[in-house]
Image 1 (cartoon, one colour):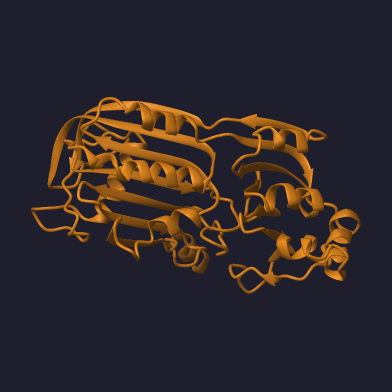
Image 2 (spheres, one colour):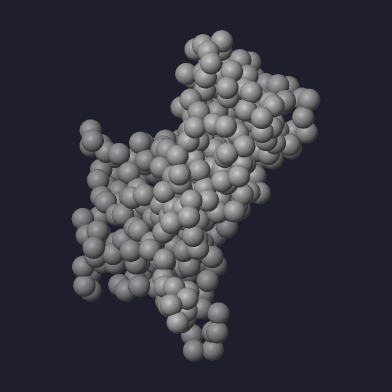
Length: 363
């Protein structure tokens, strides 16, 4: 019976909603985007729009590239050449591919030069490195987190600390993973990463882009000052997020009695827009690219528009070892960590941040 009760338990999900204005000095919009490092999907929805402006479309088309490297040894990240070429001269991001955070060893490189390892108990003990138990291990500790500061290592390549890490990665417990890699920089050639890892199986990829126009879309009525909604006058931030999920999933919103797939309907009050433009970008997408998209959408209302608001939604990789900053991320039953901006025509915005059961509170 106790086991059955645990199976029936609904895991905790945390949704944080706040409102601000892009013109405020203490607005946190850029910080939230810049510290959410590993993003696999970005979507934006523009009501009362049938075609994207050329500038915005060009921005969407320039969200790549990123790279896939097969069987890359972990010791490559601590070499003098890698740190000097990529870590010190831009923002470098890496994430193990096709690994499950709750079952496998996973690794992530953050733009601040931190290399984060989430290791099972046996691997952790074999590496001989110092770390800490995962905060989501439970009574029996099965996962450990190791954080290695590459900038600190590079300052003294002859130190005992560097020698120990190098010995661990090269001799004690050589680890290889398939990695997704991306690098944000200025001035250097795009081919640098391809040439640097030419001794390995490396492929360059561009994000997948899906553009569509939704007709006769029933949209919630929103008021920028009513985050919690107002009965009969405006929908809440939570209701909007549910509705966006249905729209992005191409679910039917009319709640017809013969529809056995979805009984969801648009929250009230609502209005029908003739056309809405939906764009979804999927890949390994850098925060710097998302910042550019957000900035452009902020200026969408510089000229009068019929739309009262637009949205920008970002989802992180479910099996990333971190969510925001260096906050440990787990999977449990969903692995979700995401955020959404609702941008109003008066420069007000709503920010919604959601995480699952194995996550700290969003920033």
